[in-house]
Image (cartoon, rainbow, N blue to C red; front, side, top):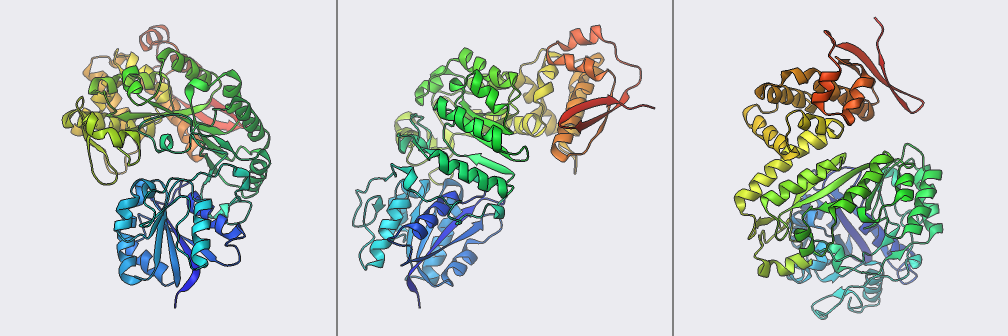
Length: 549
């Protein structure tokens, strides 16, 4: 027999990772357990699955066995296919269960999901809407209410809690045990004032709402006590409010241990000296949405861009040693293969530690998805809704751009090439995209070998490239510069102190940060035999010391 007042929430992450933290479902669970309308009348729980290891039909059978009559699904772009199978299986196993769904994918595809057997859809940020709907069901009424799309209320509008201080904290309420997860998603604000046409946030609440400082301080203390290693701050633009940014970074710099790493999403144009300095005092990395370096492309999606200003702001991060990555999107309106290549060149010139490159997804509910027909953007009709062709990028252009993306992913980002990539280009007077083109072609002829690490692949490619161009005399310096930084990367990744072999003194090689490779080689001759150097950390300071014979 089913308990009419039991709710099981279901979340599904792609895989086990520091990002596999079901924050949305945890917020709903906390609201159900803390709101007086449901706290003592409804029992609620959360089942969290992984798409790469948990079969959705088995998951449906597990959820059905719990005996709940209300099951809520947390739907996103990345788990839609998994939940489609889950919904179908649960409908067969437990046809009397009332299904509801929330999340960006549910809000965008609500009518479609109602047709699949979901009974109602939660639109917007669901804490207040779900509590209201479940309370009505507990009273024997229909689930209709603010923010609830249902067959009897097809004109429902999204709801967004205006006063975040009224929402209970999953962390402080004990609903979310951070020790169970390798990373935590952490909100300091909600809402985004920008109008980027490709993004879900642009169709949500434009009002930026802040959690109280006192709540954030208490949550931080809990995260510190739980020894959480990775914290992903979900604010769409963390540095939008300068005073608050300074206040939060000062708090983190003062309280957070060096073992806790933070990731922030920031707007480059809003960076300034003080905030860059404070970011440099926190163990963190920043992710910045460049998307394209073409002003025409960016205007078409509601963004302004001045390459000079952007580069100047990014230089602040580099001057304070702040780790950051840049995002690029292939195939935005007016984007061409060449404009994407120029964007990639520009992005690499900013010296990001990583580049995240995505093919445009026409996400349901976004402005671009609504305008896809008039813009002649042909795309997949189902998740993940990827672009297939545009008036300015045909299928061949997209395939070439994706080949560049794959080359960049391996050679630049996975290979952590940021510190020596410009030197590798300068020796042959190549654009970054030209070097990456050559790497992609090289891998077609000489694929990765079994168990070969990325540093070995980089080394053999650079040797082959410089030999092909007849510039072997530059290799001792360049390969030494590469090995020096590869060794540093190995130390940072593993904590193990490597030995590297260099044909130049390590201090001399450091000059390649600013000196052209040709000039360096003519100024500093290579030793006849490479010498061993030991790379190690002592009291937080990096040392590269020659090993004594």
